[in-house]
Image (cartoon, rainbow, N blue to C red):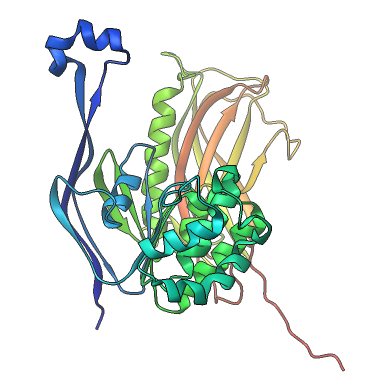
Length: 399
């Protein structure tokens, strides 16, 4: 029977932002303090539970409340209302250098940080050599940490956190600071923790990292929990949020009298079979994907060309083709509604969910119209390989 190790129940957190930036501002507006403050709602009645052994990703745009929530779970901040119940020892990597005193050496900070995380002095001595070896900064362990680089901070902090035998590991984006070899080392350690049945809560802007590590992903938006699902579904919601942000901040190229519009995009397989599930097409690797684009040309566009992009649900580009740049194909000038069919035979993508984006350009490579995530499809495999490309491996013993 699964056991809840984290319960977040109706958690709300607000902060007061003061507008006066200088002593002069504060003196001039001394009688109007309330007029120069603003309340910011970081979290608004957030509820969810985490079971023992689960790996949860917290994702969302900047300012959505991810780090605030992680600090409340870790006991660094207290909620204004609601409660967080936690079972087990927590190790938290919340901020660069958090828990370190700059005037103490790395050695002294190991003992200080380990004691904060619940280890006795004797336990820390037992783990000390392993902590230093994992961090890879043994040459600087007796140097004051105020002279450490950001990468050295993270190396030592992560090393302490994973050696205090935590039941729950909280990680807030700090792994992005270390160099690539150390990031790989950290991810291997996280996977080891998963194999051991420990619980992980990860804040990350890397959709690929969330998809790789997490069993679930929780999407926060302006302090509200808007999605709690498997990573594929949650990250699609996140992608829609990001697309809305980009669309709202990017001036539209379309005019009141557009030259061409994308009326509809739909997908079929090689047999012409349309939607057979919640996705437009579910297909095995090596099948043919057919992309149907219904375009409406208000005016004839000389030299126009069309681009099809296939992206994973995390936003990674799988492949792209353009009738002009890639295929060197000249398309005739058209007027009225026409269906354009682009076929992708023998599409050997790995198991994942994918989006199709369509863009129509003029002869000067100016985008006339674009429809992001115009259609979706899924690839399901026999699990012989994992990753973005599918193959059927054959293993032989020679000699």
